[in-house]
Length: 362
Ligand SMILES: O=C(O)c1ccc[n+]([C@@H]2O[C@H](COP(=O)([O-])O)[C@@H](O)[C@H]2O)c1
Ligand SMILES: Cc1cc2nc[nH]c2cc1C
Image 1: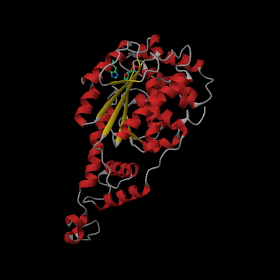
Image 2: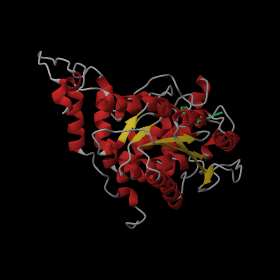
Image 3: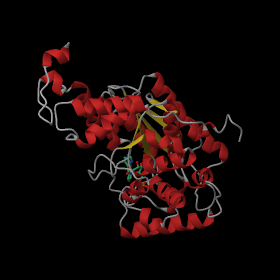
Image 4: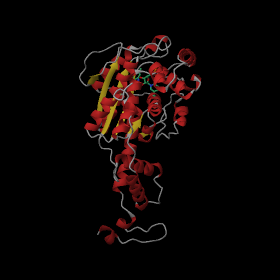
């Protein structure tokens, strides 16, 4: 691999410590007992550092949903047929999918990317085609992706981030759609964390206990086949999927160009883990939106030392959990920017000190 093809190894930007320190100081001057807005304060301070601004803002939110099919679907690991991945593309573009409703409500840009679906709907207005192949290979029999396919999928994620940045996005939200991708995500996370698949394999779209046991056995077979994978890049190539790799590439690219990220559910979090393994500098750019109902997500978040914002029992994917958390982040920014300081409002501080509002305005 030369420098051009391994762009994902390039250095990530760092949060701006001055902006974060100034935001912290401002929080402590706002008319509330210091710390009383809890994690909303921390979020505003963190976003200040990431946006290099004392007054972070989330008016311009960009959502990319990456869709792709998985060869391992042939093992009967999902409650739904593979055709749904392609069918949902039309629903994303047509405005009827959950993420389409949420994006409209948030006033967010929605970028839908078809990376390869067996039931390919062809060109659809509002769906960007970045076809890698109709599907990954069944990783119980072979590597899911060729090296060129993995590079193409990573690059597709980075291309969405370039479009987001060019549109002035202040937050990147990544989502995925792919029947059987909880099997790929659980297999990849098991390999990356050296963790038993039984801890990470869950119901996905709705398997029963017998279905989950079968899915676990399928992952165990795949892990045995790919036990000789010698690097995390190789684990991603052999066990991942096009949409998982696109999210991985997108998260790294966000950290390289300086756009904060809100990570969605189980599959997106596995992509975030892969991104940090490929380029550890991207970690500080990733905020975690919610704890999915999918078994294994809690363990994964613990392994990443991530504290998600919400726990609503969601397990849809599509970036829906992250979209639901955006208003919370917006409120954190609005409180930070809009509240009066003790001096401005003439309210006494903690030690009884009283400020003159006229002097504060001067
Ligand atoms: O985001 C999550 O936590 C999540 C948990 C369970 C299922 N999903 C979605 O369901 C699909 C994968 O489920 P499955 O059962 O086909 O592996 C895929 O399109 C995901 O977006 C998503
Ligand atoms: C209908 C449907 C919608 C989805 N959105 C994300 N994953 C999904 C899986 C199914 C089955």
